[in-house]
Length: 353
Image (tube, rainbow, N blue to C red; front, top):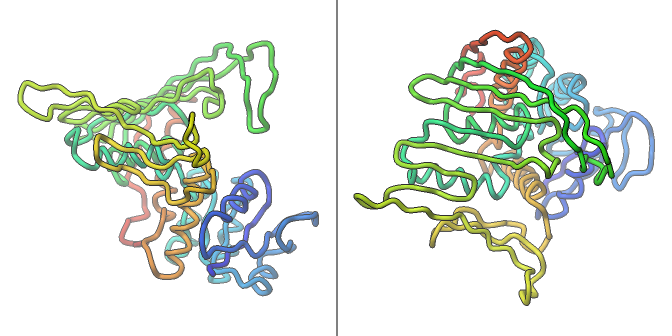
């Protein structure tokens, strides 16, 4: 068994604990919490005590962003690998400081799960297959800040390249029927902020970021992902391309979802395919996980394999830091109305691979 401990036990930490039940050979052995309370795992008052008593192979931090760097530093000091919730630090100075302190250790991964969600994993596999040629532009309108940047960077394969960022904000009324706790039963719209940004990575590569307050959960706003390439484009779950001269084809990404009609296998995601090609296969069939839970399970699985020396690092600190660096540039450009240009991060890939 690979053992892990949680730091915090709020919404995200509880999700990690719940989803871990679907991952073979993975066990949650404790949680570090500020106030003693009944938990489904042993509770500890500080990380050092938890590491000494529970002997986890890695820890997962799920604490407020301002507290995250201190918890990461504590784990690195103890020599324990860390899977840190996003973002790893709250601001640009914090990212630089955290990298200086923790980057050289090679112990820190970031819990960025969006590219592991079945729909996005399938889209990424399609793009990487070359069916739309070389990707040149991505539009993401679904999730906020660093999560959206992770999707953009992954689809365009831009690495840590500099970017020129421009952004604007508008405010308009919007009904907000759902939040983290579930249905709000709200009857009246309230002001919602929309941030639209363009990112220019050079060499013809660009992106559009479009996010409205609570869009991740507000089902009155669509979630959209568009990737344009030299030989076609992917639009949500459809690809248009030229398989032969003078021939334009539209091909759908198709999800095989069991449990409908007379399918008595139970409700589950099984595969996402493009024609006869399987782009994504759910490793956790039978556990009835939603897409975010499948991604979280895959992240924990990858982290466990990495600490056992059986797999690559799932999402190194440098990648999570670059995501948030660009997210902060969008916020700055929107707040000031000025163009913001980022430089390549001071966390070279060779330092963490």
